[in-house]
Image (tube, rainbow, N blue to C red; front, side):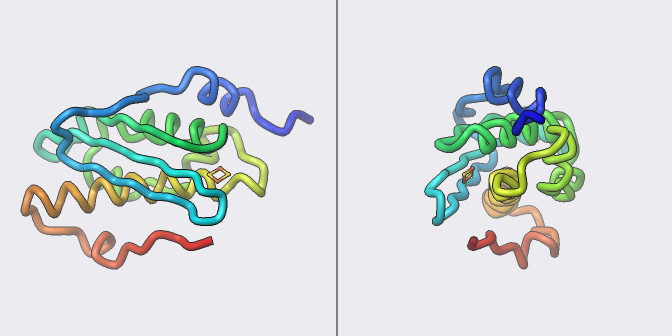
Length: 139
Ligand code: FES
């Protein structure tokens, strides 16, 4: 059995939503101290909807595929829906990741949460409870 699913390979080779959003409404950056990979997410928000999202990932293929898939899942969704995105949902959408690579999908979940926190801080809107207690994993 191949180590990586077709979807992982596809999103690694043709990542969606790569780049930077100038004057983004929220920016989140998360790094994993063990592997050294870094992911940065930019979001554009109108009303309650994330109208645009882009990422830059300095990291492994699974991190790139996870960021790409996460942006696809989040684009056009509401802030509340984005808040509920779990790394598990990203892994499922990719049809799985090898166990040693699951932490790469955690970066995607956390980078989105960090971007949401930045958005709430900058916009002055009330931060949802879930984000108040957010702490990135330390693996
Ligand atoms: Fe660390 Fe993939 S090896 S994010």
